[in-house]
Length: 151
Picture 1 (cartoon, rainbow, N blue to C red):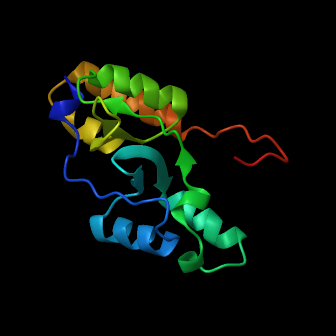
Picture 2 (picture 1 turned 30 degrees about the vertical axis):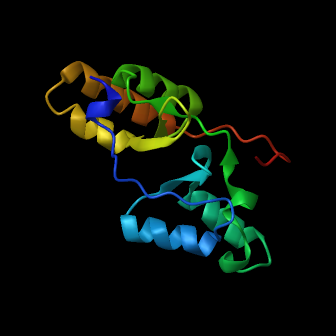
């Protein structure tokens, strides 16, 4: 099954200049945990609710004083709409991510695909459902922490 059949296309994004408060408000409004960061017409990063929480808790600043560009992961892992679900699940496992921006041929935002989207799509496909569950199990496993190094 291709990602184009699974992905969410009505996607909200933010820019590097937006504040964490604005990004958090957008996530709350859309009931999502990640926003692609778009500059011009290209996806240049991604920010998660976890990124916002950690940045807000570890800096002596209000979320309205911190920009998305200061916190967002640059060069996010992405996929294209033509990829097969199994290929995307493999990337999610390797990179330990639950959501991927879907980009077009110019790195423009085309949508988002999440592990939840893939789970719903696997309803009538036992093989895909098994891969989704395996991916969720691997992503959710404790990650070894390198002391003294934060990324």
